[in-house]
Image 1 (cartoon, one colour):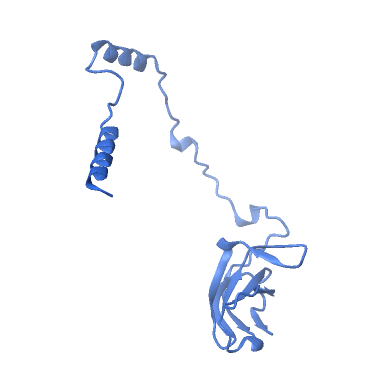
Image 2 (cartoon, one colour; image 1 turned 120 degrees about the vertical axis):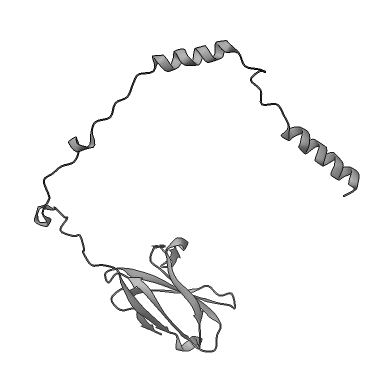
Length: 164
């Protein structure tokens, strides 16, 4: 661009940024009195003391009601070990997802934000530590760098080992 073009752009930007704020000029004493009148008309708000809200009776754990199908199992850190003997020597990348949708074709679509672990497949093997629930299933995707569709399969949270 030429220096004339830069100068023209600079001047146009300067003019647009220095536009007036609108709303008239100097101060008007009537405006101040109107604001005071409006403030006097507003209702006063009072708040209740917090002592009235606090419930002094303690709740025992036996008084809690929980659905029968609720699982109190905490998420635990587990080792995941995947082995693909037919992919030894092949460059590939592994991703493990906790959320996915199964299509009518039997393929899966993972939810990208639910990826738990990922990394390269080295000599056909992948190992990592991940948070897992025993009753949940996880989607494993193995992408090869040659551009094929990914290998997909499910693994159980109880047994995070897979061998093909």
